[in-house]
Image (cartoon, rainbow, N blue to C red):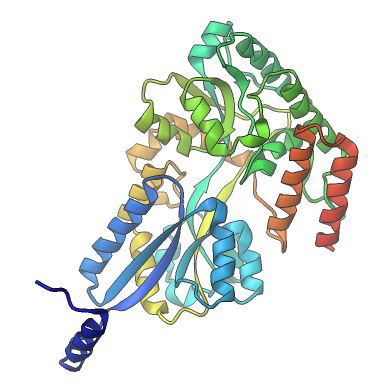
Length: 409
């Protein structure tokens, strides 16, 4: 049977519409790709929603994280953005200030708000209004390979950075392309990997006087520590060529003794290399016992220029039902953002997730300030320069701090 042309199909739709069959309302959703499971999950959720709401057509677009902000910026400037999108919560202030994100409070009742842990919902609330819903939440902890520890004669995971360096040296001595500590130096969160050492030395990203903390002793010491590990061969070679996913792949291959990352690596290990013998522990502390983990929430927002707000909200209400939140959180390996999901045995009895939730009191979130993404890029660039040996630590960080201060002003 010959398929109708687009023109014929449009005419058919018009005829059906005049006969009492209204065309489906299109809702476009831009989704950040967390893993290979992300797209299929949202497509399945959309199909289930459409079955219950035949007058609404959900269109899912999956975009890699590394290009998401660039794509959204381009789409917004061309008035071609979707109705809903996942964003990094740290971007939200700029979106709100620009009038891009729509407040959601008119759609939310007490029952809906009560589904969430306040700590994960509050980062999306500004000036008494809610502009986003926490679609993903995580913290960071240190993974370690128990088999490599045993081969190197290491009995317990390191508690301090000094102990980590000593353990990494023993693991690196095993040879066979085995590396003590997996260090990220490329793409998203390169700056964050630096912050772990920075925070444990007592550093603050934004000082009390409102200026950058990169030109402080804490930053110098953290950079010197990482650079020493690189120069001593305790990390994988070519650190600035390794993204977070690249280092995670090394760990899954059993070639890295320790690395810091999010809960979702545990899910990947269970699915891809279930026989890998590993543990999860706290991020090392500094000389005075200080430590910090990176707390992250990603939000889903509705765009102010959406012409389908009611239909878009209906889909959001479905996505944030317990059933769909449980499937997404478990599939991607995130921390539950809703109490009912957290109480499910699959999460409440998960020993790995408990290690991450134990670190939440030490969690630091990216400052919610205008221009944070540019600040993060400046920091990452400075760190890469130091790792490559193309700049001395103090002048490189001082220059980065001066540029950041211009933004903060």
